[in-house]
Length: 565
Image (spheres, rainbow, N blue to C red):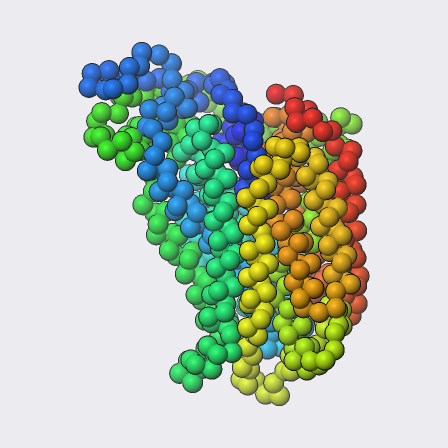
């Protein structure tokens, strides 16, 4: 899915990634053709002076003031960036697997825990609550301890939480584990983009970050295959006599392993030079540049043209001159946030903020709910068509079909039909064309047109779910729905970047995406409560949300250059 990439958006418009205000965010890629522009350094702490050794170097460079972009230019672009993209892609695919693994757990674990549809709604919502609370924490860790440290710790937490949840013996313990699973994985999801982006120049950043989004789709495609291998009836019958664990527990345990693998892979990568420079660690930053240069060119590290980073002494002197009493920075930060809140509440911006917040609330309420419930819905279709092979029925009719619960504990041997895995895989594959062509469509038709058209069309497809009469029709409508909604938040965040000036952009993005996470929680709880009672209500609610959001977005100005720079 193209979800939310705040730091990239800020960087593309000249805003500092070091400001990484990610409270309540879930990050994802935004691939948009934004003109690259090099901003002059605002203070000495963001500058770097370099002595350039001309002797033995093929690059003729005069001794001059050199910013991050120029220092990065001398390290070249090549094999290192491709290695970094591959490992970052593995991390992002891991995030996709971890974020959506519950979709296959719902129909399987329901037997062991005797879950109602309302309980399943709580289960899907609890991970989103963890994501909502965790992003601000991981953003702070990324700013204070480093991007690499934050990604590694979040992957480690996700691994342990998922592994422990596979052994949970009651529903309450399982809920707690899945909360920390969401709390952990959101760190890697949100920080892997700035981590990769801070190794890239402005000219290369869009291209590489756009490619990174493809790995999310790989994760979504891989997950049904893993579930098919572990949860299908044939496989369960094969290893059931020799394995005492429930199949879904093995599935959850296997889905935790990519987090551990990603942790090991990223351990061998360096911290970003941008972070190191911004925090006065110039010697370490120079070492990273030298390694990048050697890896890309095959030359010795000593031949890297930039010999000395002289900004460290100036940075230390500046820090001493700016030393303030304890608590000064905290109060200053609080004051800055209050000032930005007042600015957003002004008549000039409040209307647009309300529109984007409402749009993301409705978009995520529908997307995150249905994408996590599709396997459950298709499994109920499978049960209905098995019991009534000559009849047709819609979603609300088949939602009344539930697996038979065992009369005594320990008798669960629930399996998912093979068609469910195939149908889920088709839905995942349907996202590839839209994610691959998103940048082209935004460039040709404009962000506003893509956003409005996509919201209205996805709303109509949500309403069409009430009209389908068999699993094939449901699959077709669901594929259209997910292919659109999976990219629309990316477009919405691009619009937010255009609407708000640099000093208000981070807060506007944070509030918008926080409303989206609240919508996802609302959607999952509501759908779980009403699926067995009156499933027409959430379906029409999602459709009205999406169409209403599209109509409201007509009030957004079309010009991409709306925000003052």
